[in-house]
Length: 181
Length: 231
Image 1: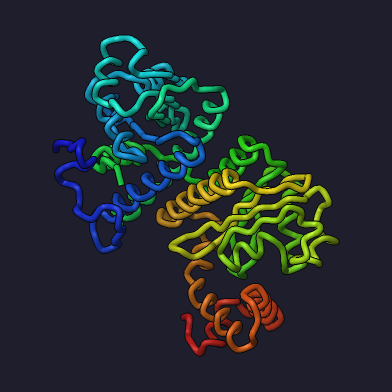
Image 2: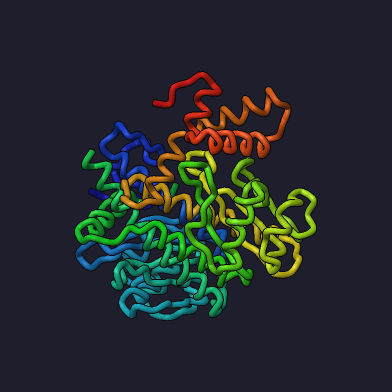
């Protein structure tokens, strides 16, 4: 099953994801996708960043791109997934916030490639998302211009990462309920 | 929508493998804590309707803010009350001098001054409110309102997930009941507004009082008024 970074969808996605329909087998997944999408939009407003994106672990210890409030956010996550490096990976590995003021000036081969692939994104703040104490992914706030992330930005990010964890747990339970119906 | 549904499906399946607590009240409490701490208000709270169409606090940052619930319930008026009934943003620079709610002043903690409320909507219908207050008179600017609306959206997504997962909590059960009968209640409010020439808040209060006086559920009375059968 191949991901399509251009559309943000995998080849076997249902064609009408985002319009929950209780009659379809993937209604739970569609509902979850809609919930994550709306939450990323809300978090963009709250954080006053240019966008927010999400990476989550896949069960084999790999972080995968899950979503972005904009196409550039999802592209950033696909770039990190492809490079297997970047602020989200560092954040989850070290279990702490990682702030990058400018991807192009951060240094390191991985970051150079990341900056080229996600060219419209310059600054990134990655915050681990904890479920039951374990970092299961990262919430990534990004800006199109270089930015010095402050302690206030990090505080907002940490609060929103907690809410992201609550929402993901709720969506997982809801998706299971849909599947069992 | 920019979502990789394949990766989302995989991650949700991982989360499903181990049991996690899905307490929506605790999650809403975290939202209230965030709003309160991050934006420098003096207090915040979330109220949701119960099966009697009463706005009840499910999370509040402090006891002073909680007085908003009881005071508005007793006065049957107030900014959060209007936010829910009219399904729109309601703000006041100083609730104590606001002519819209004259009976509230006597009942409300004097430390509650500037108040803002935004509706929490499920499927387009309001089911509760996110409220913040300041202890001094103050104007509410666009950034306050944008952030509050965004937080109300997050709260709605948490509640939606809880209801979809059939979370077995009192809050979820009450909310599901209220949601199930929201349409018939809204129709009855519209009917009362048209027939008695009153506004939405007055129609809502009349409906609730009549239900309380006759010891019936608001939804049952609403259906009777409309000539429907809710069962």
